Image 1 (cartoon, rainbow, N blue to C red):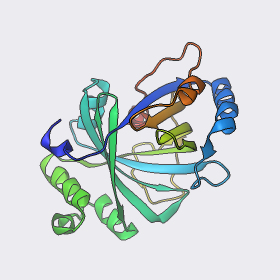
Image 2: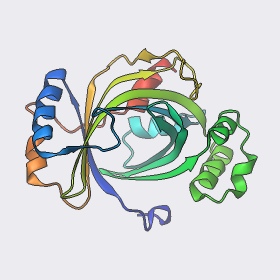
Image 3: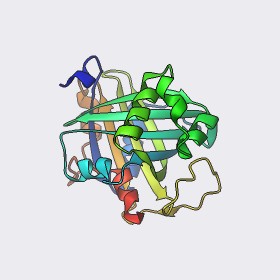
Image 4: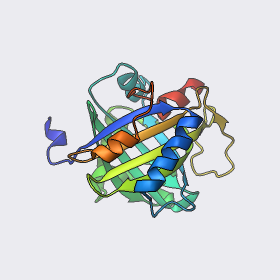
Length: 230
């Protein structure tokens, strides 16, 4: 593990691309043993993310080429509430992942969208400074909006989180992240993604529940799916 990852807590992660029938089966199983995420209203919430990449499509290429170590930056908010915008960096080493997060204001998000970023250089939040460094040094810039619906479940043993993501949509060459009326379109392969994250161990009960016939662990990326439009 390199110096940038020292001290970071990594979690295990696996993904499956599943069918609508799989989703119904999983919901029945999960509702019997797990709890809905308390942040989800009516069991679901809506996520809007804006991913960063550079002119060489660094983040996209690392994903498509299957690099074992990679990272990506995004800003996101939930249920249309721009009062709580998160700047996030997701790091991945093989099947282990880590997410660092910092709250930013809507005004700061607007500045980032406009490339008014000089203020970030001396900001007190390390993640904000890191994004600034990589916007300057690697040419990262706002690239693609990704919208989707999520149904999350939690299971305390192992600190397990199971999510069902669907209705994945994107803007066509649009990064109007804060505009609630932005026109979005479904991605071409608009499937349902099952994600399972856990700490040191995955309880057998959850492992058995998420096993589906003829479904294998995969590396589906909502960001990569949305990049089909540019």
